[in-house]
Image 1 (cartoon, protein in one colour):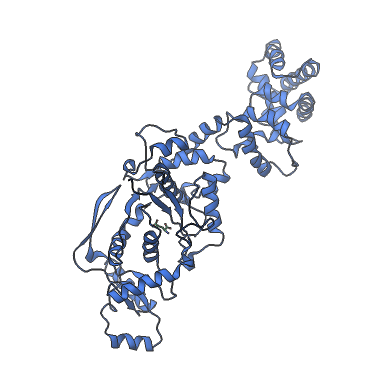
Image 2: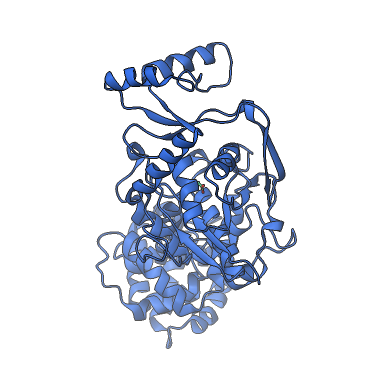
Length: 486
Ligand code: GLU
């Protein structure tokens, strides 16, 4: 029988989720789905000072938006709940007590000031930071004395001082650490809350997590975890540490590189399916060349063996390209539906909702091929919705034209447009192309002027279709205004 796969995403609710975290969630989710296993959402909120109001909702919102559904979690429960660490404090306390009783952990009474002094001294001497183990061998009597002084201790892990700790990582292979480089980490804080290290392993064990999939930055604490599993008599899970994310300049991916939270990408009009495809390729690939993969294809082919160790570079240009591909492949109706909220959000305030869906239906096909993100839609189409165009009059005068020749060309075009029997794209083109020749103008000269007059922009969707959608009345009115300006 194949062993049951249970993976988890265990974020700390400290703000709008970073793409790096969501990449981790995606890999854990893909692995669970590929193996018909379970994907668990667990909230690691034991760092009270770093908790951010609303962060859990933001996390869940981002996961839902990307379609990363969980089988057990704080909102839906499950057999291994509760799924929020602050609701499981008793379990960690019990584990910490057991470790102390067994002699694998000890009470430490050192004040924050003392710890700060040690740190400063180590920094001065260029030594690695770490606790100097003063409380590790306190006698019962010394301990009593400290207790009588009213000091609430923390519980520290008594790491072995000799030997090595090894673990095998699906991505990194055999990893080993010298025990004498490991610090006696705090397991339980004086406020009764566990640290990440304790809570994480207690929960991964109790929730029967089979594969711990997380960022490379956790490799250095994994030997502690392995030792803790052993001390508590737990079977450690399989570890898979995912490569770091960097910007294209190879430095750690941060705000400097642009948007880094999933919420921002969403606001900027990226499609969730493009985002999933893009994130899946940050550290994993099918064959080093396939770029476009649907969610189903990703699930079908995702294995941890193909996760790379080399840092994954986050290339926003590639994301833009990919998003454009996904946008172009949307059914027109779907593109319209998804664009609506961006139009409602970003069109100027004088454009009153509700927007006419019939009108938008005509506009959308003109821009679907041209936008990189949904947020480009309002920008590119605002002239369809506003009453008055604002533009620089100079833009009406195209290359090689003067105020007079422009006025003349626009005047003639206006008259012909008014007389044109049918105001559709085809008829417009059939009339306007020869008109340019008739006036001895290049088509670009006439069309450029008309484009500015009716859209206020020099770059816009195809002219004839645009004019047809705007309608005769609006086009004539806008040409009249352009003439007034000249
Ligand atoms: N709470 C940790 C984090 O925020 C989880 C790390 C892990 O997956 O073990 O990244």
